[in-house]
Image (cartoon, rainbow, N blue to C red; front, side, top):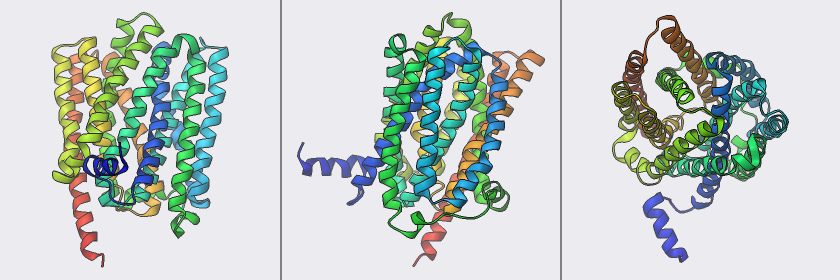
Length: 424
């Protein structure tokens, strides 16, 4: 393919403007390696969670760990420039993965290894992905974000296709410890792309100096800024619906498959279908929807689909229906919801992009996970509510999520229009 043909194709399908190609390729490769690493580990985590049981306590532990880490992260962001605290965070997680690889290789049947790994990976995923998008909303302006966040997210979906395949094809030969070390190598690739992207931020004063401010600024901003509070509410109701489905999945998969290998392959197949759908949406659909119908309508597509999916699961419960629902829901969430939701952070301040956004993505989201987990436990064990009742509650949460997402999208459109009118 000639250079001119490639340039025309990129302008037509990726909506790239002149001078954006290098930054886009680095962002695409960064997210490919990052999500590929995580999705390689996700089947391992889910398999260990089924074996360990008592997932409600694991979700609670994740939330507590998040709260303990956030002040330290706030201090890092306030004290060091982005070119220091971003690579340092990733290097820390790479060392953690090497330690887990050793532990799981030498004691693969340990229940405590599975529990600690579940909590750690849940914290890790929230932080590394949140930091990735913080950098993206820093690098790209709102107009570029509308055009490119979908294709950039497609890099993650492509990595998400590769990750589960590595797990499925190599679990017998590498074992869980070997898979974890492979994920660490992929995270090194993500770190290299991050370092190259940081050079573009470092060209101006924003990248050379610390952001400063209080270590508690992320939490305090939610009480002072109605726009940021609206973004946080999206991540309150979204995990309520998602976590209900997660616990339904845990129970159904545990009953349907007798061995860890069979469960890991089922999770891998669902993840593969998820990423395939997300990849199609991100490359060919999301950017066009964001430009033509706006973020408000784009954001409500997934909550509405979730309502329909819970109704289908209540009417015809089964492992096949569950797998299809999970693949459609998560594929749409990664393909449509995630790029649209990250777009909403492009007009906010530097401090909000790195502190408030990280607080919302970690503490608020995992707090919703924890509350949903204990609610599921109370309904299923305490009140003996069956699948139909829990699915109905999930549908109700998704309906509220629809309204909250619509309001957040409308607030973004109003804020963006006001800033365009006041910018000379």
